[in-house]
Every structure is written in C-alpha cells, then in structure tokens.
Image (cartoon, rainbow over all chains, first blue to last red):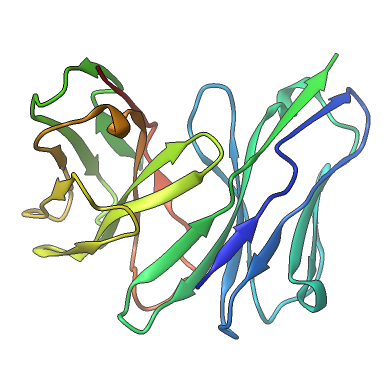
Length: 117
Length: 116
C-alpha cells in the first residue's frame, strides 16, 4: 500500500523566513511520481511540481525548491524568503500505477503554512 | 479556458435527500475522478472513470454513485446523504489515466457539502 506522511500539521513563520515542508512516502513500486499541490485560502488546488522516481535532481523555481531523496523516501519543499501570499495548505502526493490499471494518487494530510507579515 | 467545472460550489442539505454534484471538463480528458477532502486526512479518492461507461471504486466509495455517459461529464450522486458525508469535494481530470501515473490532475474549484 502507498502512504504519504506530512508530519507538520501547521507551520507559522514571519515573512522573509525560509521554511521547509516535509514529505515522506512509502511504496514498493520502483516507478512512481511525486507531486506537490498548493491550496490557497480560496480553496482551489494548484499544481506546483511533479517528479518521477528516476529523477533525483533537485529543482528550483524562483523562491521554491524541492529536494528528492530516494534513500530516505523524502520529497521536501522549501520556500525561500517566504511571503504572505505563500500562506496556504500544501499537499504532497504519490502516484503509482496499480495492477488493476487504476492510477492511485495518494495524498498526504497536508501542511498549513501561515506567513505572518 | 481549459477547466473543470463543478456545481454547486456550496450546498446545505438534510439527511436522506438525494443530491447530485455535477462535474464537467472541456479538455477532452479521458480520465476523471472524485475526491473528498477532510481535515487531517488529505484528499481521498471516491470514484474514478477511465473513459465513457468505465467507472470504478476508489478508496472511499460507500454512499456514492457515479456515471460517465459522456466524456465531458462525471456527476457524483449521493442517493441518501448522511452527516458523515459533510466534506469538501473535488472533481479532477487528466488526459489519460492508466497509461502512466505521470499525468497532472486538473482540479475543479471544489464543492462544499454540508449534510444536516
């Protein structure tokens, strides 16, 4: 069975601080994909990044960066110089293809980030 | 604009009163899915559909029905809603489901349902 753990339920930082959101996953599959989604207060889900299991390169996009480590089954997300607009719930998700042909996308429970001005 | 549209966005109903949440996508996606979001549990899959007339259960299908008569529509039906179905519901679609787990889901804006 697949599992995604986001141990940090809520994080509060002051603007301009760096913050890292942790994501630990479990799967027996060798081929899988990892995602991060953002859910701002308005409620919609916004795709941030996708990473496949064969690509361990870290990625940077502006103030956002992701650290994928297969050795520790982690896919952590760092926001540098946080801003109030970063306040949201962030979900990590794991996608595997099951024997039945079903595409199982398992979400973590989410981390609520509050950035104080 | 490419999007997934859900209606209604907000609904308060009473136990046992049948309701339908509609979902429509304009991207010609084959794969569609319903999720519910509950505090501390993240998003859990209710049902999914890999194409027209092909649907299957997700992780939490009890109390729900779906149908896929047209490619663009995937309604979620609660035949006899109960208070434990109070939740935030999301519809999502992606071009192809079973071929790869890589496809990014496009989500609707969400439907907040309260069952009294």
